[in-house]
Length: 245
Image (cartoon, helix red, strand yellow):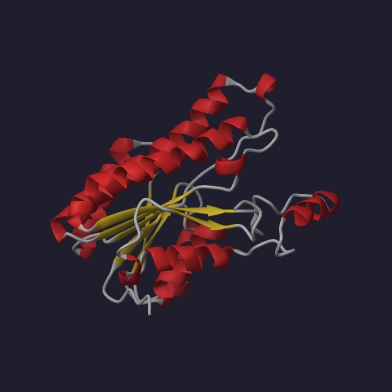
């Protein structure tokens, strides 16, 4: 089940953390994966080399619409088409609301929201021609439940839910689905800096009593990318150990 043989997948922010796990999961199911990076070409190439086969890399900033269009056009020329988009690239800039800077909010919006939409728009051109496609946006548990010090970040992650549902309605007639994965607290570089006391407090909020792994999130993305998920669109798949239900 959930095989992706012959499919071409692009994972933005694919050189580390959840993005890398998504690359590995899709490749394990048979997809040819393109690993996107904006910095750290060596790390992205290391991921592609480890995947083997026809895996390759594509360096571009998702917030730059022209760069996204050019890069995805190049991918479709190299591979013939693009079937799957995992819009994982994102950043976090935490601040209490009273200290929130306009520039920080703009930066978050351009990367987390506009970046995902840029990629979906560009990828959809190939998907429409093929009349098959899977678009997955990477949100966050805080996009649904909020969090102290993350007003701007939470707003960008919440925006992805509305964007995905609108895209799902627009492209349903072309057999293109659009869904959201909303991870909870996952053991990655972004959460690795938390002290032991903070982690202990978080565990009390998670019914399963443990912090998730990047592979847990990647498995959800692999499912939503598959033929078996063809009747699932406009949905949010929460991977959070029960932290938010």
